[in-house]
Length: 211
Image (cartoon, rainbow, N blue to C red; front, side):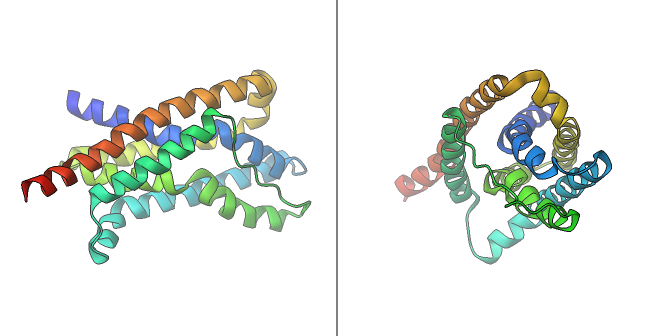
């Protein structure tokens, strides 16, 4: 039971920091500022649903894709570690990519924006996809796999709630609070990135030295 809890907690922390729902808030509020509350909620639902489906697809189908192209999971850990570190470094410096809607005010334009780039890749980017593949591969027991699916659902549920409360959050924590939170998340991501990188590099080096 303790191992399941430790696995779930680490998976939750990693996935939540990679998605960084607080960092998504500026993009979401910019997109929905001219929409009413009902329309804004619909955009949030569409974006998080898209992100959820993508994560589940790669969690369950990622290993098949890797086997098809003969890609090792340790190679993914190394690449994922590099991607995490770069993302964390940008977050630590407060350099988040913000995408604007180029003045498009129609609801239809907002719906398209909700799928891409808001759902993919702003909410579910390469880092989050890598996390879903790696952790599902590391979940050897069915109980761990179920726990990870619950983690994905929980993270996306929290992301959805955060987006729904985006305007209140911005007014409460302010711009400085948002920057501070983003930098803290960036530091956590960088630490996880180092662990992930060497976790993938170690077995490869051992295999080379063994031969």
